[in-house]
Length: 321
Length: 272
Image (cartoon, rainbow over all chains, first blue to last red; front, side, top):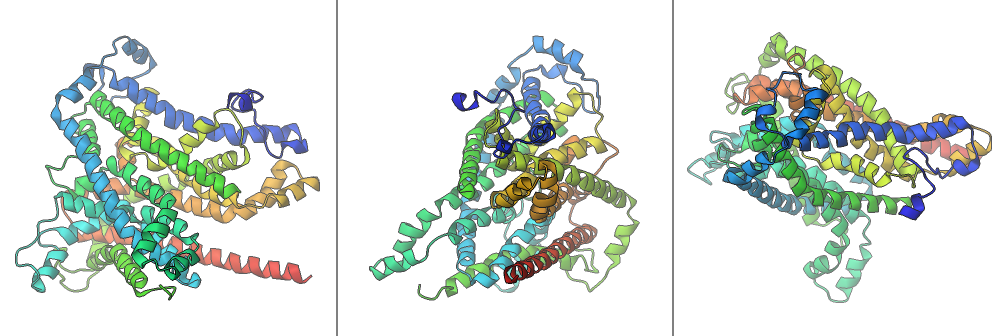
């Protein structure tokens, strides 16, 4: 890496694949702007904020201004660097509530991801095997709910799941149950909410992996006496593994920090870290502790996020060739 | 499995789509319910839409949301397209790994983290929370989605027509506007639409970064949802769904027309 970048002095000095054509200075400048403008934007609005979160998480709780007081300029900023403290992190380890919230978020996200995979795989598989003519329509039908508001889709489930809701009405009327099921405000409602909201994120990468598959391999296996289920586990599933990994990461990572679903569908005893962070910030107005919660959450997620990014980069390399 | 599309495949697709669409259909149906009870059908009525248009708070919030969405989607499309060009066209520049990390990470970053970190940035630089801060926040996270959409189109782009244009003496800038841009335009348009709906939808990041004067529609809906399910909210949701559905369907019709036109042009070109 060091050798290959040795001749590129700075962020802006680029080696375009087309620059060999020897173009004007104007061209060189636009080349640089193409990189520099989005680069600086993301540095300032994505990376720098994390540094600030980290810094605030190390400040004393007393230093924090109450919300809506915009006086927190760079002067105070530098002063407060002197009294960095790890109190907030100590606080997080002392109160078992936070630890339980992290563990329960990871657990809920993992179970939901598995359920989404189980629901999404047959759909993606059915789409990949559908006649070519109707595949674009099916694809659009999967993407369409994604365009409607997340909040609305979660809200729609409240009316269905609550004790006097539609699901219970239907089940009671048909005589399947004689007591209304309590689903809303439990973890089951959260599982349903996450599976429902994130299903397109699972189906799309699975579909693109399964669509590329050569189905004559399965026919060959079956001709050689392999049973359909064995053929699935030996051929189809391994070949779709890239889609499985991408889909699971796309569901798991945001689900760990999910706020809207546990807040609207979960109960008061539901512990999820996104909800904890939200209430530390908005209800307790404790910005330093909220920041510390965010830093730990980020540390937990940094490995899956990097994994996701390298998978994306690999897919991009394959797309190039 | 000799038949290409087995019964199992069809059943799983039908069940899957029922799962995806039934809740939305139910929500839309109950917005026309005369009864105030959201789960009991009391006859057809559009009175909730009427009372919706009497609710000045909701209308104000809708205007804020549309303005934030329009401005942020437009800026995010420009920045996202540039980022996509940078990622696909320049394979070597210092900090490329960091750059691609910053483009992909926001796609999966939990919203509470993005919201909190942007808020702390705005406070640190002394920017008053309001319309501007929500817009800046929305530009930042939606530009990454635009970048991914445009990038996937650029990866399959045939570079030789660009080279041909440059060989014929076109400057890189002119080549971009006359050759590259028309080809990737559908991806840019769908990127814009994606950014617009992401902005329209966002509750968490807006709640962190917005100030007293700039309440967006999702924030308004959320505060009412917490008090309970009402047919009025169903009506507001139905209007939002209708707006998005019209946009998506219109875009797909335009895309299809363009595709047909392109095929016709290609056939005409081959004949001559």
